[in-house]
Image (tube, rainbow, N blue to C red; front, side, top):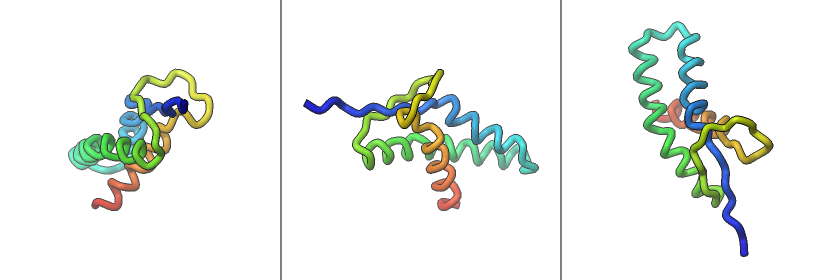
Length: 88
C-alpha cells in the first residue's frame, strides 16, 4: 500500500517572512497591515491548492530543522505572494 505523502508548512515562518519584508519597506503601516491581512487570507487557499495539485497532505507545524523537500514553507510563501500580486 502507498503511504500518504506528507509535507510541512511552518505557519509561523509563513507569516513572519512576509511581515518582516514589509517592515523593511517604506510602505505606510496602514497599507502594510492591509497587505499582511490579505496575505493571511490567501495563505490557506494556496496551501489547499498545493496539496491538491501535488496529491499530498499538508501539515501546519513549527519546523525546527528542514531536511529536503518535506518543508514547503518557502514555496508556499512565494506562491502566496505571487497570487497576492496577481490579485491586485
